[in-house]
Length: 252
Image (tube, rainbow, N blue to C red; front, side, top):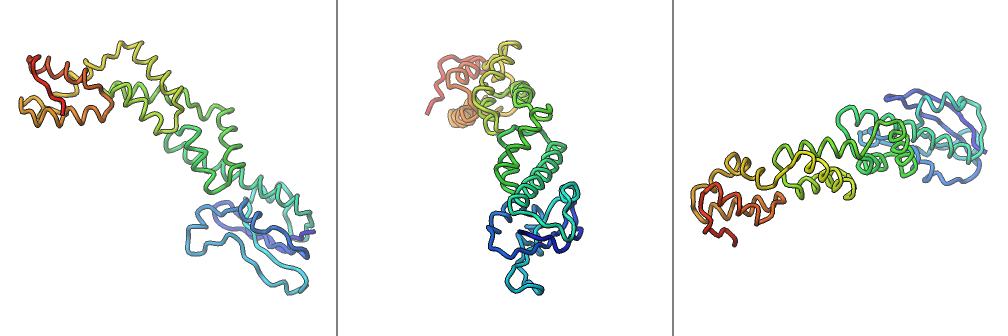
C-alpha cells in the first residue's frame, strides 16, 4: 500500500507528491510515467527523489511529479492510501494530460503529421500517452495527414518543385508514401502541372548561370536540378528550348 504524505504546487501545472511505501515497488517504471518535461532539462531536474522515511524506517519515501488537474480529479491529497496499480493509472492519466497540452501548443505553432507528433511526444511522455494523444487529436479533427499533404503538395508544386521532390518533402514531414503520392498526383493532374514548364520558369530565376552556354555551368545546374527530383530528360529539354540549341549534351 502507498500513502500520500504531502502535495505541493509546482510550475507549469504540476504538483510534487510525496509518497510513502512500506514495500518495494518498481519506482523506476513509475518515474518513466511522469518524466517532468522541461523541468527534466533544467538545473533542478529530477525524475524522482528518494528520501529517508523519518516516521518508519521500514518504508521508503518518494517524490513524483503529477499534473495538478489530474491529481485533483483523482483525489491525491495528504493521507490518501492507494494500491500500486492505482498510482500507475493516475500517472498514466497525468502523462496523457500533459502530452495533450504539449501537442496543442505545438499545433498552435505549425501543422504536424501524426508520425512526427507521435515521435515528439513519446520522448517526454512515453508510447502510450503519445499514441493516445495523437489518436484523440486525429478523432477531433485537429490533425489530418491527408489535408496537410494536400496543402503542402500545392505549395511545393506552385514553387516549381518536381513531383518526386514534392513527394520526398512530404515524406520528410512524416506523411506516408501512399498519401504523398496520391496528393501530389491529384494536384498535378488537376492543374496540368508540367515538369518541363516548371523548369522553364525555374532555370532563368535560380539557375541563370546555366544559360551562359558554358558546359561546366550547365552541368552544375543539371546536377542541382536532378537533386531537386527533376529527370535528366526534362532538364535537357528545358535547357535546349531556353538556349535554342538541341545539340548540346550536359550529362557528366
